[in-house]
Image (cartoon, rainbow, N blue to C red):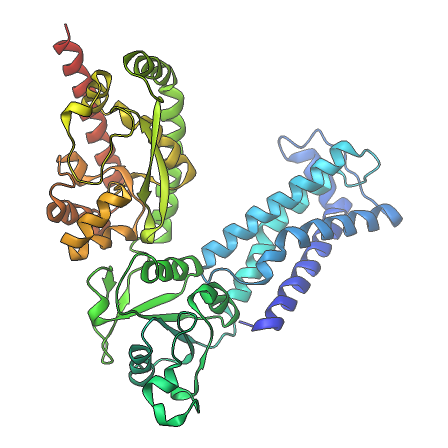
Length: 464
């Protein structure tokens, strides 16, 4: 891939050429006539071709909208081809929506709707392909070490057979060359690499240096620095390796290398599985919220009549790679009564709350988190951050759960295994990560829905 300034110039020039060419092609009678006569839904439009100043205005305005929308992609954010394509397509749709809005409010603006439709159709294919080509062609492999211990970073640089271009240490950290060879007095760094900055610059380092592989050499696999770095590597689509002593809390793939490094499995599922899973999540969340709307109203009224306090309560839960996100549930306890210890005091649960928990109806508002993309329908249960810190201190491998989105249900939830049994819960969660598939998700959802309806029936019969 072209580096630095060359990449930016290539991306901007390529977009400009493709957009101008697309507008000119869409403006020809050869394209206009078939579109406005044979294509359903748009065959009511009139074939319109521009010339002179009107054509120049259409080209300039379209080019400006596309360049503004796609400018952030001139600095690569991810090495995953699918991410690059989807992001480019999203920004193209934004640009075309802006052009359509201008045309709607300004009748003197001359970009025929038939031309805009053709521009959208062609651009959604050729422009993302251009960015995908830039992100995969002509690049040299490069690696960087990220850590908080200069001596460990120096050992990785000396021992690993990777094309290192530098290392990243927290701001104010001791330089690696001084740590490994104090007598050099700040001389030549280990293996000729340089200090690329602190952890706060990791995003820029991964993009500017076009890193393919990151070795994380931290003294502790903490939530903030270690998993924060993992999260950034995932977002940029780079490979990650860790020393053997840091392998317990991560999902790994392959065997230990001769240099003592093991590869981290940042994406335990194929992109097709992730795309299908997201589509299923969206459909389930939308249908679920619409169908449950009357129930949401009834539950809200019951909560307000039963006890003082808000209808919903929020908690910070752990997401992928140790990030946090807020979830909302129907309140089932008296306000301000939550604590961080797994297990609950039954005396603090309200009368309505007991019914909601028994029937799982308190979970309905979490569909909003599924809709936002913070959660999935199926996955390891999202634990409260304070509760999770307690469990982490008891189960070393607990953080392996962080490599997929948390879910409303999963094998552990179906079997009634809770955070009071962290080792058993972790076993079921990892089993799900390793065996995930669309049909596995469907079976788990059906099992959970059957359980919910059975609980609703038992509750209804028991109250008679």
